[in-house]
Image (tube, rainbow, N blue to C red; front, side, top):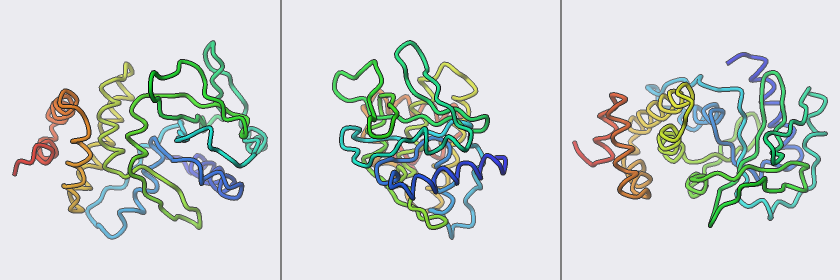
Length: 231
């Protein structure tokens, strides 16, 4: 992670915090690891996560319930962010040489194949499967005076294993798997095996088998043993 990228990330959070936006979003994606290090503070064996990417993903659980009115493109304009319309349906991303901001929302019911409006923010969100899994169990981490909402790390890690198997980009799949294995090992070190198992069991049996098979393929048999309650 480059310092200027990290500084930009923190400035975005400070502005969102001041505008009251962080009450309505969950930080997901690789940048969560900055805050998981704070969450795991005190466990000396835990790793230092550095696998952040250019993508800054923010999840809005219920877009229709967003109340505050903030023009996000204007809020970040002086930082060098420009609006980009992605695809033929007009998904809005905010683009900067160091970061790309995208809003996501859980795909529920029959799903939608078009942007979900975030009218109060001058943005829209992309609806994706499995994101509702992330928001069932959230934690709040305070860092530099900012309260940031994240998925519980067990949910984040298992979700990464699932997403990796659906990716066509092998490099992104590899990074997802690496982050998942690191965090699951750290959770085991922290004595949270029961939490990992309870999260894993929310998936159907076919998906459970895929998750275990993926872990064994990653030479992470210790984790798969925890999931299968062996040893």
